[in-house]
Length: 237
Image 1 (cartoon, one colour):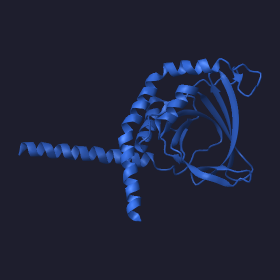
Image 2: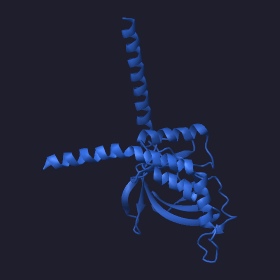
Image 3: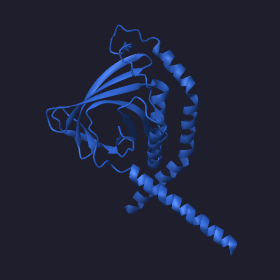
Image 4: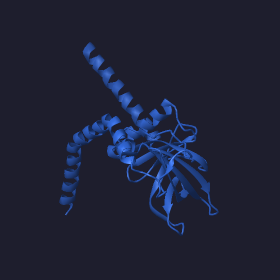
């Protein structure tokens, strides 16, 4: 009888833990009720991805720092995002126009018409952050600050875990965009870039090995899902 009681307590405890985890994930994966004011300067803090290779290669090859300045346009809900990139001492810039609507962001064409799938803004407990998840299996954590707290980064990690995605990789926090070489200038010597990338790869080999291991162990599950899906489609005919 005593053994039975102990077993019941264990089962109930596990059930409570699972329910708490489920509720936490439900909250983290819910789109924001009200987005922050997107205007102003933001920093890319971390990236997570459905495939660990996306975030791993971003960290292992480029080790970039990215800042974006968002301004509103004359058209309602339209914004221009001006990006500054820095990687291995070289800098570059880019700009994109976006439509913000119903807590989602859309790329737009030259006529400001939405195109493609929407990027969704997810919940974040960080007071000056926002999280964007796109339809290609990538999410980004942005903040007004160049660095966030360990707890805020841990929350983003939990969010990625709820999605079943890879552990986030953190961007470089070197945002000195004045003292760097322009990647757009044809006269700038970029011959050192391959060696810098190779050195970065050597210094982050453990991250790459972990991703390789995760990919290897995911093959049976992916194969099973593919088989189940294709068998289901076959029996529908």
